Length: 227
Ligand SMILES: [Zn+2]
Image 1: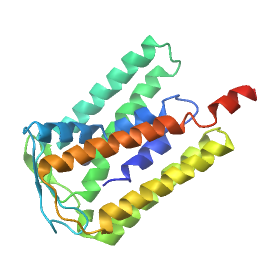
Image 2 (image 1 turned 45 degrees about the horizontal axis):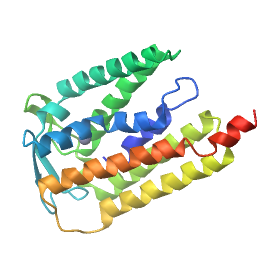
Image 3 (image 1 turned 180 degrees about the vertical axis):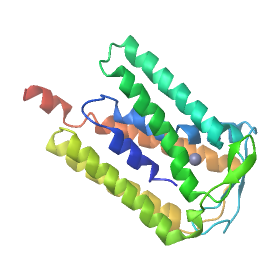
């Protein structure tokens, strides 16, 4: 599961909770940030195998600290508490529910991974592995990713007041993510090493976070001026 994760981030964003879009971008990929970091540190293990599944080359045979169910619940709780603590220091009015939304956004990653991954997600430690394996079916998996992303963006646009220019930018950003997903799913490439793969994860996810940050700046000045 790749761009599908960003559906939750767009859908969770609304006027009421005031969570910046870029924070939600980090939240929905929080477990993968931890995973990429732990693989770099040689604590979690990854094999990159050509043709491992139809839609992914990643054989995550040991990732209990980032991707077991118990770990996912714990990290979701940690993220919720951290966001709650930071936002209450800044006097945000919707801090309690915002913390909960962050926690749910982090946990949503595990649910979507459960759909996509082969049986490599442990319940706890490295035991009782689950995963519905949609990665084995390339086109349905791709369709699901794009459908989720589309629904997320539509909900975001429907529920958020924003200048027209930013609406256009959001749609463009959606198109950009679809192109990235096409590349990820369909363009054949030689497998990178495990370290290079997770470095790529870090770089791409952070690029998306920066783009989300900039996206919310678009047209802001005009919006303030017109009040
Ligand atoms: Zn993941």
